[in-house]
Length: 155
Image 1: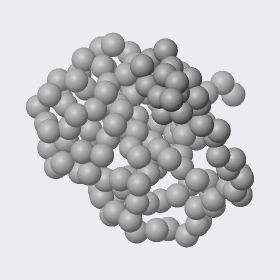
Image 2: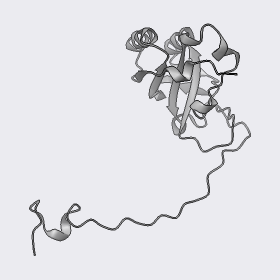
Image 3: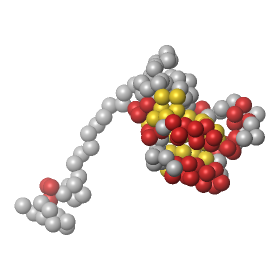
Image 4: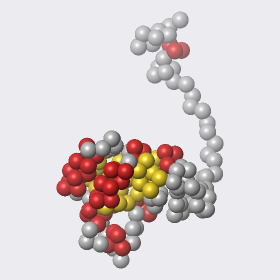
C-alpha cells in the first residue's frame, strides 16, 4: 500500500486523504420557554449557549464569599446588556459581567460561581480588583477588559 508524505498508509492519513464531511441538515432554531424555569429568569426566547450576569464589584465580592449567586438575572448576550439605570449610572465602570455556560446553570436556583468562565470589566483598574478577589476564592475565570459592554447607550 502506498505511503503519504507523513509516513502513513495513504488511506489512513486524514491530511493527504481527507474524509468527506457529513452533510448536516440545519434544524429549526430551538426556542427557550418563556415561562420561568427554576433558577433561570429568561428575558427573551432564544437558544442561549452562554448567559451573562451583571453585578457591581462589591456584589461580586459578597457572592464570592458565599460561593454562589442567588436568583441572578441572566442576559443572553451583549446585545441585551442594556441594564437600564444601572448602565446609565456614574458607577457603570464599577460593574462586571459574569459569563457562564447555559448548561452549567440550567435548573438551578442559585448560580455556582465555579461555573463562571469569564469576568468582563470596563478597565484595567477594575481588572486588577477582580483578579485580587478571584485570587482569594476558589473561582478560576479569565478576567478581560471589554469597554463596549460598559459604555452608556446613546439615546
